[in-house]
Length: 266
Ligand code: NAP
Ligand code: GCO
Image 1 (spheres, protein in one colour):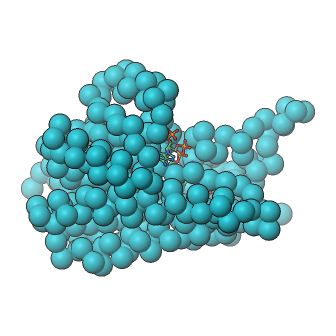
Image 2: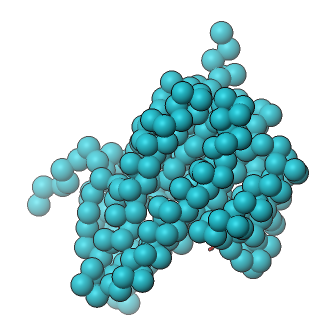
């Protein structure tokens, strides 16, 4: 048996949400490297123009769509266009997400809802839009980008942790409900990854020293470094490919060991 063939995505169509930059862009690069045709979306033309140039520079013939993943009508329109232009979506990566770092007692219900809307309700909307096609073809892969906060809490991220904890359970539920159609829904739980989302936690201080949170994360991570978006490529290709056909409802943490570690002794 040629085991590498099981990791091939040749002939597959992959849609990665929020993949103009950051983790989504790296995952799309990984899937393209394994042979998939790439569709992605973001919300604004400015990011789209830059992203199209970045995909081209990476040698990837990606299709970009302006679409807000919280809007069911825009999502339906995007999926219809992808089906027409590339073919049915075989692989969906629910990557688009935001975070608001605000102490819970100072956070408005509106701010809380916005995070849950993008980080949890949108993966429901996106998955609901591709599931009928996957059921018809009796095959499909959905990958939800979860978080350390699917397992852990910390100050200021109540909405994000609630949404990412919920996303872990949405993952298990999709696996439970649609596994009989040969659809696998799994999650990737990235550790602390250097992207625009985490840039405020890594800012150099006015006195030239490292941000205290930066130092805290290095101390919490056995690998003693932040992750790079590229660290997530292998897990994404595995979960998108037939190599993972009997893996369902699993969250694969790619965290340099954070969840295994009690932390450095003082
Ligand atoms: P990022 O750099 O902030 O990128 C987020 C992407 O999501 C952007 O492309 C953004 O596009 C898009 N997006 C946000 N809201 C959207 C919406 N309503 N509709 C469509 N696109 C939307 O974040 P990242 O660090 O790469 O994170 C990607 C995912 O991994 C997120 O779900 C995040 O929670 C998760 N994650 C990140 C880390 C980390 O340490 N960085 C760790 C664990 C999990 P626009 O700019 O066009 O809005
Ligand atoms: C934070 C971070 C995180 C991460 C990530 C960890 O403020 O604690 O932004 O929550 O980005 O999701 O896995």
